[in-house]
Amino acid sequence: MKMDLYQRITADIIAAIEAGVGTCRMPWHLGAGIGAPANALTNRPYRGINTLLLWAEASRRGFASGRWATYRQWAELGAQVRKGERATTVVLWKPIDARETEDQDGEGEKQRLLARAFHVFNADQVDGYASPDSGLSPSARIEAAEAFFRAQPADIWEGGDVAFYDPHADLISMPSFGAFRSAEAYYAVLSHELVHWSGAKARLDRDLTGRFGSEAYAMEELVAELGAAFTVGHLQLGCEPRTDHAPYVASWLRILADDPRAILTAASKAQAAADYLIGLASEGSGACEGAVPQRLAA
Image (cartoon, rainbow, N blue to C red):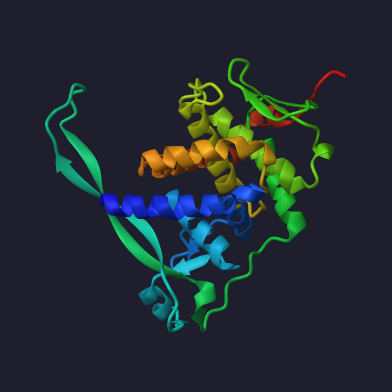
């Protein structure tokens, strides 16, 4: 991917974050409520940085649909992009094989990815297309979310004052369900802590050693924010802003400004975390009881 594309993507995300600083409403908060964005022709969900880019654009321009496609794809569907509509850039990585000099691990071949920019339009920008029904009622979405979180084999304790993941004890502490204004708010926070939990050495092995105020700490918080949004987006739930995350925003902006690749790295790790949790839920293992919140002693 050319550096100018990295810089353009990062600039878009920085602008979206800065626009929500006053309300702590980040570009992924509104987007998650729409659900995971998907291609209107193939029905394949967009992933990683593309999810974030499309959510940011939907938030900025007030799109209510999570369906996107290229100009040609809309034509294949019998729809017409309205004259004067502006496209949104997404990135497609295509694998290419390249022989490289053998490294210290003795690997003679490595797979490389070639990045290309594509331009897509939202369903709200076209005529002649009816978005499919979302399928699940609000109550059915909550029921599905309950099953999803019960399938997570994490040690979750309920009844504390704040939500956090303790990497040393490998447990999650959550305030009681009644402390949240809605089930969606509870599950959004639980998703955030489960993303932290997924980063333990025995799981996805992310760097969880950073102290508050450090770049590593801020980066992990960004991964958890995005991973939680990807997770609740998959569940078609809303993702609400958290005022306690306001101190992280300046650190996020600094990280993104210093390294144009940082947002892609964070989005990639966040997608891996969401995939990990989704995979655990789909397995439906006998360890489900571990995710039933345990009450703390009074």
